[in-house]
Image (tube, rainbow, N blue to C red; front, side):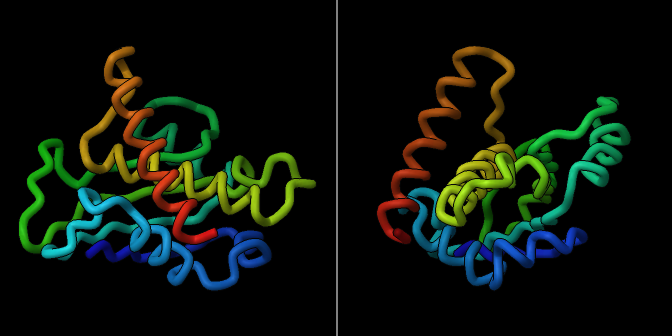
Length: 153
């Protein structure tokens, strides 16, 4: 079971995502079996933020003075999923997800699901520095995304 502790420091999220905790619970419940961790208690923290705040975090932790769509901070370098495991933190920028501003709610949520899955995989140790790792991560992302979309749409 995956528990997502959702926080927000950007008011605009409330306009597009009414019940944040329920939304992310549904997303995680729709993951393929291998990522559900049914017999374990997995938790993570999700901060729904904006470009200004994510830029500060990106500068502080990655020495990159620019905003980005998502940041992931795994709790441990080596992931060992035990009975009860905190896997880390994800921060998502509203400004990135809400582009273009004219997009409908369905498209907004699909982008959010996709980027959340990306961050989740980073917490599990996936990365995309090398091309072969990028391909592997992309394949896993797509598999999870298709599972989620088929169950919650």
